Length: 182
Image 1 (tube, rainbow, N blue to C red):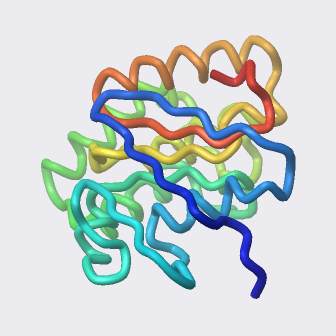
Image 2: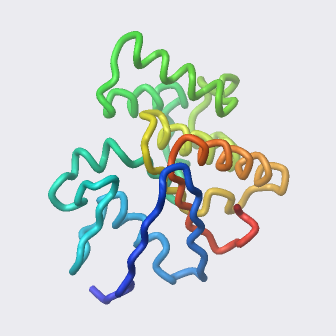
């Protein structure tokens, strides 16, 4: 119930990677949730690809991929089941659903863990699965909340490279406390 963000204006271009840097509690996650349409601004407006997050929730949901900071580590669901569920939520079915899941598992090197429960995966793989669900539908805007937090230097390097490659396809906005995350 307190004002966390005020007088902010941000314009991102297509195929651009923007970093939101700040200490814990600075409002980075709140801003991403506002942009994803998960929170309503108390004043002003948020538009994503020309769609107002209040009045065009479905269009915003289709345009945005969101990887939350805590990830998806509490579920006992297998990775394949989780991605299948996300694809169903995104209204994919049949051959198109299989094609998207196959593409994303190959792109993020998840094939070997498809039958593993989410909560049994190491942090790096949990982050990859969270990223997979965020990009499964080819969003125009990808919002990443602390994508390298808790990862080894090797895993951080791989995630950074992946973020750079994704920025060639979509607008990527990364919230992080770590300036080296990008």
